[in-house]
Image 1 (spheres, rainbow, N blue to C red):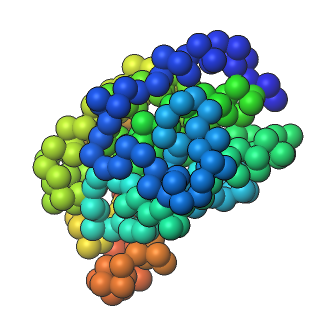
Image 2 (cartoon, protein in one colour):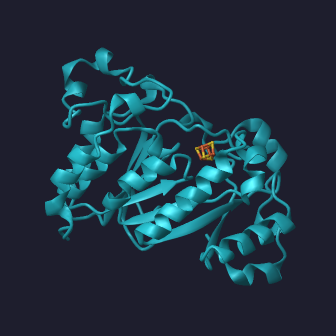
Image 3 (spheres, helix red, strand yellow):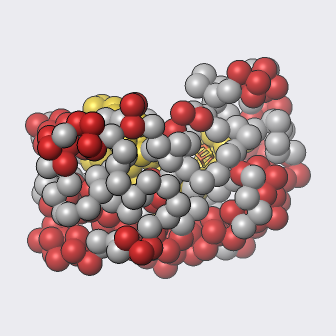
Length: 273
Ligand code: SF4
């Protein structure tokens, strides 16, 4: 179904162009671009670096509840979570990158079958090209979903006008983020991102991955109280996933899940996915 917000988005995409001076640490030019020659460079419709994409899933029913979507896995993340579901997405890897133009071609060809496109990662907001990529999807009449941990609140705020739905991954109460992500200031960023999502009035959910190797029952219940006090009454719990994780982590997890952290009576206040 055509997106009613689309007509205003060409102008908005220009607004979203991020000056190189604000680029985050990491390559400002897609390292694989020269190797691939002019074909890849044509993917840079709006005049700057294309998205660095680690994986593309043409069809998913599990990334946006109730919708059939294509999923774009954006490379790179500033955090190093103990339970990272896929550490291969933490860094830019030109050798593993998908071409943005191939993603656009796939989505365009299947517009009638898709209910949207979800940008996930890694941390999608790390890349300055995210806004342009979202704007293009909206111009194509495709609804945009975003999975983010909220590592870059200012960038998130900037792209929120292009987003139809957000899944915000909250990892712990603010004081525990350093222990989980390796960056002490990460909690401040994540909760600032929550405030931006709430202020934007975009539909959203908050997910919490429950990891028996880092979370205690008290921590999860305290986090639920913390979120409730900030207006988030419904939290979606997710199992830690070791399929693509580091072998050391998989060994420590040892197949344990939410049931190793929470008691059955605790689950009534959560959704579990
Ligand atoms: S925020 Fe996500 S992608 Fe980044 S390290 Fe944590 S789990 Fe991995």
